[in-house]
Image (cartoon, one colour):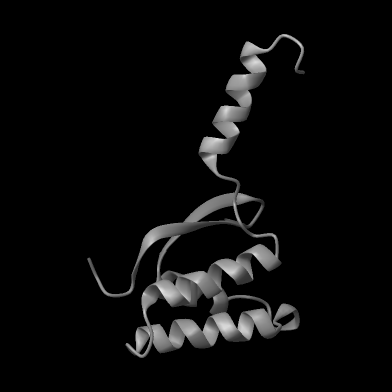
Length: 99
């Protein structure tokens, strides 16, 4: 596995709500670099700096992943877990009282 690859991808929503898996520090860095300047805040700055440091080998990729995930969560970008959606639908299909 490449040193900048995440052990588990971070699924975020982009565009009109399409889920995208961010699998590496470089992917996260790219998304952060494209974030509109007017919306950049401290969480963005910290995540971007962490991704840069991870790309230079100064910190672990998983540290950058955690900060990118925190940024995504703060900005409501995290995609819902597919397993949770499937389980919810399965319960609804089995329970006649749930609509």
